[in-house]
Length: 353
Image (cartoon, rainbow, N blue to C red):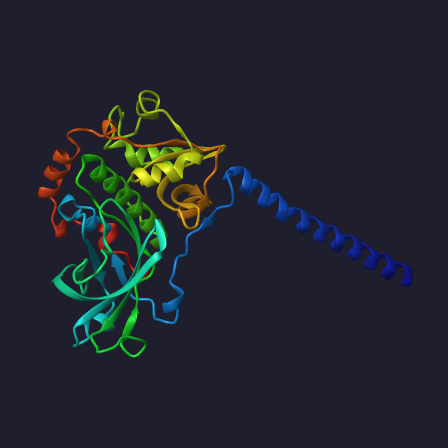
């Protein structure tokens, strides 16, 4: 019996050591695969919440990208935010509502500012849900917060109106950051805003676990073709033709040129190809030496990420000749037939996500 017990103990010890060795090998293997798949330097997913409001209750309030993506609200100097509010505490409050907005220009992380903005409840939607609207503007600011052809991230908390704002006035936080792009004077500026808002909507829907009704495979390359397919020349069946865009007068650029490109023009909507992966640029932060990116098939979902630039990258920089002349004529005609009551079923009924 003693020999049997000893054998059993030895066997358990061998199995345990083997298991530990497998675990030790597994982590480097997964990390190697991740590095190979998303090569071109370390990559990290952008934060999903603001640490300063982490103690606030998560509200049943959701951003409406359907309404925010309309050409009639594609402003260059302000940002209109639409919130579909289902939260009883918010809807039943007797005091006026105020949005605490922490806004960051993605091209300059040091630009972060906090603004307190009155919120207007505009109309009843479905059931107990109401639509709330507020504008982030430059009114009264020495330096403009909102500028043309830029990409911003916002964290939003809702408060009862007060002389000062904090935990005592807070009703809660709107879950998930809000990404938005401003428009500009040129056709290219407007097209970039259109592309960015299209992908932000997809990112947000994935975060909330909703369906959008869009038809594209969860593939990084296919996602970019879909994102730019309805606004670029040479597209077929709603998918961009990269050879038509970056195979002629505007060839691919080297990733090492991104700082110079971003200094001269906007880069949101631009294409990047690295070994085994592709993604879309959002902004370049020179102080960090990193780009913000929109990436599909990132662990089987869509993510906003941050990366240091790589000299081995191939960059397709969008130019005015890439944009359809009739893009916004078609968009305007579509917008004229769209009303609040036509918001998709999935967006109007998100449940308790």
